[in-house]
Amino acid sequence: MVWTKQRLNNLFFFLGCAACVVMLFTFDVSFVELWDHLCHAGYWLIPIIGIWIVVYGLNALAWQAIIKGNCKESQQQTANSPKLPSFWRIYRLTITGYALNYATPVGGLGGEPYRIMELSKDIDKQHATSSVILYAMMHFFAHFWFWFISIFIYLALVLVGDMPMTIAIGTVLGIIILFCLVAFWIFSKGYRNGLVVYVLGLIGKIPFLKGWSRRFRGNHAEALRNIDAQISALYGQDTKAFYTSLILEYSSRMVQSLEVMFMLLLFGIDNGGGLDGMVLTYLHSVLIVAFTTLFANLIGFLPMQIGVQEGGFVLSIAALGLSAALGIFVSIICRVREILWIAIGMALMKIKE
Image 1 (cartoon, rainbow, N blue to C red):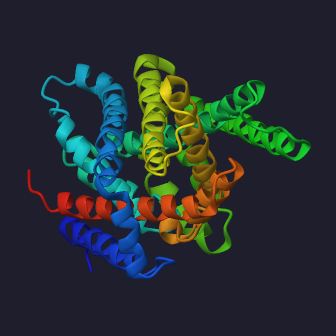
Image 2 (cartoon, rainbow, N blue to C red):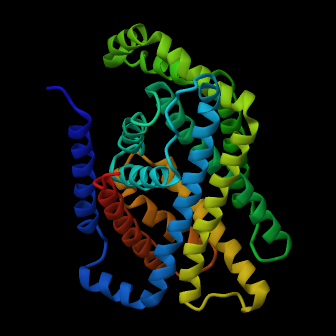
């Protein structure tokens, strides 16, 4: 059976809808308790959910910078080249792509192919593929910078007496720093030389995929080399687009931390109030998000990270000396927010432009 773009679109739509249903029935609390938590959140649900309009907006701007930088050379060389997609279209594909990533194991099996399929309607397939790969790389690259800088935020709070420091904590922080430094080196290699051909070579070492990898590389050798060339060109030739995208992606993590801050304030946790108290509460929120996302990404093969995100929130909040009940509340409200944005992403998928 030939899989047309419309059939693939319907398949992705079905996956997202199925994910919403699965997530609704995999809460660790009853629907009565869930309703109690939602009532407790009250009007705070508006900024908690609404802040993701800004988060996804920053993500879309980061991706748009990559698309413009990646297509700049071809746009200059071809007088009749197609117009690049509008910000609204990129914003819509950003939300839908992340919704599909939430819905599939090993995030990216749904969102990234969908983005390539849709973006190839606006630009050629090779640039669409390299732009999506570059953005996925940038998304993870910014994650490592977020974790790396969060270590130094923690150390700064240790110096002012706000956070504890023990041998065990110091060891964990040291391991995370080493982990991030290794990741920075790997990303620098990928950005300089491209990584598609290299990754396909690694896949070719897997027994059952060896033949497929060899055939795919043979049939698409020139296209794969062009994609790798486009990946390395952005880092080597358009540093403005590269660092603009990185700053925007990193900023989205910092804005995302406001979601947790709102929930801490809901529970009356403001570290004494005033400007100093609010800044401290925000920095605590950054650390909570950093630890939780690190924990979730290390075990990211689970569909929708069921149970992983919840455990990460409980552990990170408990590590700050706060109650486990608060951790459960935060994880449940975040899960509700995910379901809502998956539903929004699925609805946006069916909007015809």
